[in-house]
Image (cartoon, rainbow, N blue to C red):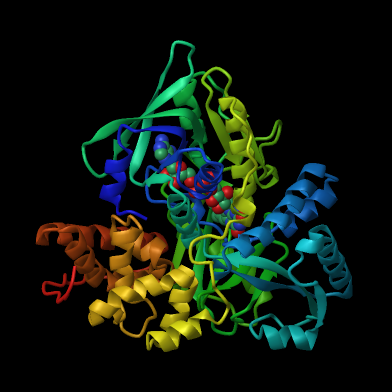
Length: 562
Ligand SMILES: Cc1cc2nc3c(=O)[nH]c(=O)nc-3n(C[C@H](O)[C@H](O)[C@H](O)COP(=O)(O)OP(=O)(O)OC[C@H]3O[C@@H](n4cnc5c(N)ncnc54)[C@H](O)[C@@H]3O)c2cc1C
């Protein structure tokens, strides 16, 4: 990818075939699809790539066992198709980015033989729908097997567990990999640039968008033959920019996750809590050496802050603790993340738990705007395909087939599960760092490590004793359009989700490295550091914990090469 300044200069006042508004999973999926079909495409993202719902997910590549349960209970054919499509896409997502995905077995604890039969049959149905896309066959575990694989599981009255496989992925890096794969295919992408208005021709069709750079007072026009609205939960705002009188369709709901130590849980197996007090399921999934627990499903008020609150932590712990031998505590929470589900309102349904998380391509005949509404991460590729089919129909040219299902993402070419060992020996790395880099960048990790060849200090850890290294910060600025400390520490390196306090500890060095790359003054660096620490501390205090003091900035940074 270019750096951000190069991307801005390249895009401003240009003309494209397709302009995608929104650079989350959906927008990036649409962009890659369009560009690979030969359409000259640009993506405009108001924040950072993937910084909306796309980094707040449960990180599951799944058909959705809960949707299957609802399909059966409600005899709902739409839910059934949602599961079927998602299970097919699950395999494609894994195949196109093996470095960012893996298969996890989920254990459903059973406290009676009836539960064992009920969940066992449900999982067999899940296998059957997956057909050739099945990852591993489901099976029943004895009480001993279940406790051996997950010692943290409640043993009293346990008769066994039903085990089934689903996918897991790194949502933040997957979004970046989609954007980078798109730019390598010749597309243009810009983050921190908001579409604020459209212009129309005499027939009322959209011809250009006004884009306001969020990093400078600059604004500019982008002309395109077609515009796609891929703004997730905010889709109604952009629909109304095109046609002010349209009826709102989005019905967003908030979901939070918390991160805890993995003690007593497995590195490879997850726990599914089959019944919550509000009739849903929640998951406890191993994630990079931590335990990710989520999610909630509550109403979202426009403008509401996306932080995890202490009552939401209490709710999650109340649901999971009955299934554990020793209860998890709120003070063990090391981080959390909150996001908004972009649900499309189905006719006559107000309960967000029952809204279908399927997608809909909406065509506004008056303005020509194509909106892709709803959906989930797992189906982002298929949604991109359906959207660009509609775009091609609108443009009236020849129809070319989608090519994304067979298109590996950046970092996937040549990747094998033991690639980390190649990195370990070729670059004399510690095992955890080699593993971390292999699963963040795939075979692209070699490019990150090349930076450390000319400056050995860049191979040092960002925080003593942790896997991420300093070269990742430099790489993020030079090649991944990172602009803020959160871009680097949250989405490109993943440290913020691994632990709020660790991210604060890494912030002074990360700020110094970014400042060096971006020519920040000492004051700019200090401001960036203080703003970042204040933001993370706000998350810490919202979760009911004591804040961290602002660490001192690093005044002397020895870097041999810029
Ligand atoms: C709690 C939770 C758990 C989930 N778990 C899973 C899961 O495990 N598996 C799964 O498959 N799915 C899951 N999902 C669903 C999935 O995360 C979302 O469906 C998906 O990320 C939506 O992507 P998106 O690109 O449509 O929206 P977003 O990621 O929100 O992207 C929309 C983007 O549009 C940008 N934007 C808005 N307005 C403008 C504008 N005017 N100009 C330019 N840009 C603009 C925003 O900044 C934003 O980045 C989960 C969702 C949530 C909230």
